[in-house]
Length: 171
Image 1 (cartoon, rainbow, N blue to C red):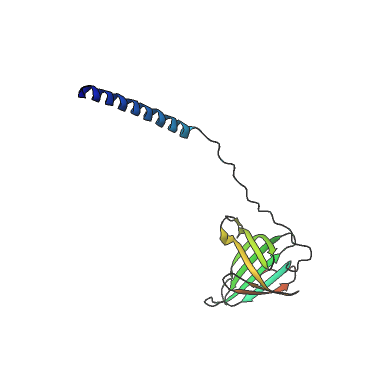
Image 2: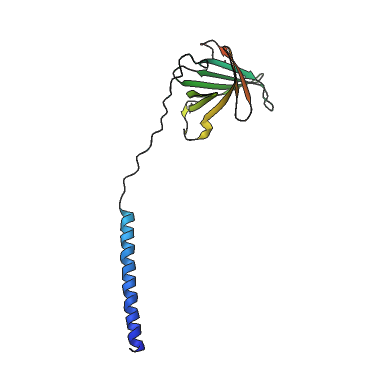
């Protein structure tokens, strides 16, 4: 076999390898180009679960406190309904100025000694329910008929007293 014939044989092999690579590439691209059905969106369950009958957390609660670094008084009003729905309002009242506030609504539940509040709407707008900022867990530090003390994960304490069913924050 001459050197020329060896080059000819090598060129023939290269052509076959190149052709095979081209065919494989076309098949891979064809597989990528086929349309696959879009995955079904998973709907998150945002329904509220009713509280256990007679749960003493059900009610209208108000906490009034001063917070270091905040001028004025913070009023936190939350309503925990027997059907598992909740509303939460926080208002900053400063002398001589209009109050500023936040209003949220959603669901609540009791998980042992913890109250879990899950916000579904904030100031009337739907929230991203996958964002963990909208789920708040408070350890129950004290619970009696007319008083409730909750401990936030950051250590802040919320001392609240039971209010009449028709109580609302003054605006």
